[in-house]
Image 1: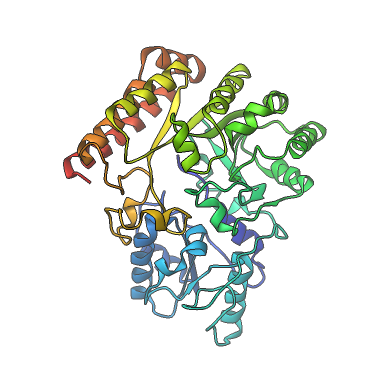
Image 2: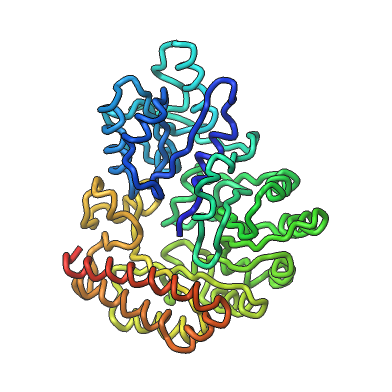
Length: 433
């Protein structure tokens, strides 16, 4: 997947164009180095956003920017900066936004324009200072035209091209491994549906990825969502996140959503062991998982299942995953070694068992092993992951099903991507980390 930079689009949509001209440079897609764009646009301020995996990349980029001109104000924001801002501390980064991101960025712009002292701006990280995480949708819509030259290149799996929209912030559940709930301090905020519909009407792409941490939460709101689509004659195909227990107990609304464009759901199945679900404070069950899978299949909704692999897994546990997923005829699964991300509830529970450095940021991508396996070597653990992927995704009947549903072009594209991922795992096996 390569998704549009929604956070930056929100910034552009909320910056007064009479005060500042703004350009978004998508450095995932661009081939030229950051110095090229600094020299081309000669900006006063450069804002960057990143997850934990690119903290090191952002720091190097900030260093390169300051090498071109020490006068450029460098700013970092995004979800990781809001939860673990200290990771971005650098002599080359002027501001780390850790609260009220859009409001805080606008303050920085005003300070720079006025020539005022820009130190100690409320909402930016200052060591030892406490800050309040708060969220609001009292803002203008994201400016998607700011990335018009990239839009055709944004996709997620078979959703191509694909736009993003956010209809709520935070998650109302308390899974202890989850980073999402930390962003809003455990609070949940939902947008007014009328405002959501207005934004959907402005989106040109038919494929829309609703990036709420949990879209399938409130049945009344979901019915209102369907009503809004019907009233405004909005015809989209939606990819969303949802919990298995909600799907299992709300078949009626899932059926209705399928009629109004719900085409795929990312579901945290998490485990085939009941004990793991309890340990994760998932508040769901294997029974819910199986029922949810069958309901999605009943209404032709694709399932992207995610599973967490604990360090105490044996070869038999991997085999159990294969049997479980194949037995339920699931086509796609994402296998994630348990990663106690800094800032999450379980980080302190595991911090003495972590194999990698906190500063080895690329290793915290939910694909590397950061906790020592108990019953096999790291190399063997990676091998079991590859083997499990292959047996689930590349089984004959599954390939035939995908060819019929998505066509040869899209399946070949996915196969090519899978080879890239496989090579990454082979390199991990060789390195043993």
